[in-house]
Image: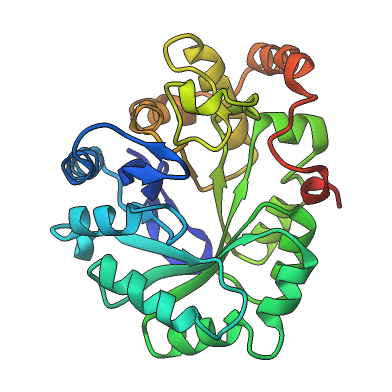
Amino acid sequence: MQYQVLGKTGFKISSVFYGGVVSSKHFDKAVMPGDGQAHSDAFVGWAIDHGINYFDVAPAYGDAQELLGNSLVPYRKDVFLACKTTERLRKGAEKELMESLRLLHTDYFDIYQMHGITTMEDIEQAFGPGGIMELMVEMQEKGVIRQIGFTAHGEKAALKAIEMFDFASVLFPVNWHMHMAHGMAGTLIPAAKAKGMGVLGMKSMIERAWDEEERYSSKYPKSWCKPFDIDEEPEMLKAAVRYTLSLGVDSIVPPGNFDHFKFAVENIDELLAHPITEEEKAMLAARLELVKDRPFLDASTYTL
C-alpha cells in the first residue's frame, strides 16, 4: 500500500480508503445476507492487514456507524477516522455529532465533514447565522474535531465553499465519465490544491447511472451507481481508476461493496506505478459514446 499526505493536514493516508457502506448490512433498501457485525469485523480486519489507515462513515449510511464502530475498537488509535453530517443548521447537529462519537467508540474525529453539499442554498444555510459551520469550528477548538472538510456533488457549490472557509479536504466525484463528458472536477481539483486541501475521489469505478430496477437485482446493490463489473471488465475498471488518479486525487474510495474495495486495494500499487495509457483513454472514450446519455448526477450539479 502506498500513502499520500492529505493536503495540509499532515495525515499520511492510504491511497485507497474504506467507505463505511462496506460495513453496513442495511443500507438504502439494500439488505445483505449473513451476520452484519461478523462481516464488518472481517472486512475491517482485512483492510487493516492490507495497510488501510483511513476510514470514512456517515449517519446516512444505514447501520454502518454502529457496525464499523464496533469493528474499529481494536484499531482506533492507529487509524484516521472521518465522519459527516448532512445537517446544515447548528440546531440538532450537536446531538447527531455526539451520537456518531458514541456509535464509533471515539471521543474525536480526525476529519468531520459537511456531507453532500450540492446547491447554493446548502452553502447559505451552512455558513449563515446558526449554521453548521459555527458548530464545526467550535468543536475543532475543543479538540472534538481535528480537521474540517466537506463532501460535495455540485461543483459550483463546492467552489463557493472553498472560497468561504479554509477546509482541510474535499471528497468529490472524480470519474472518467463525468469528467470526459462534462468536465466535472476539472475546475474543483486545481482550486482545492491551490489552497492546500486534500482531494479525496469517489465514484472512480462507476460506469453510469443504474437503469430502473437494475440496482437491487445486481451483484452490487450497495453502490449508488453502476460500477464496472470486476469479473467481466477488469481492464476497463483499471482504466477508469487510472483516469481518476491522473486528475490528481490523494486517495480513492471504492463503491460500497467489499468486492470493489478488495480489487482497488490489491491493484492500487500497479495502478499508481503505471499511468493511464492512450489506449486506455481511447477505450474509455469509446465506452462514453454508449453511456453519455446516462450520467449519474443531475445536470444542475455539474454545470458551472
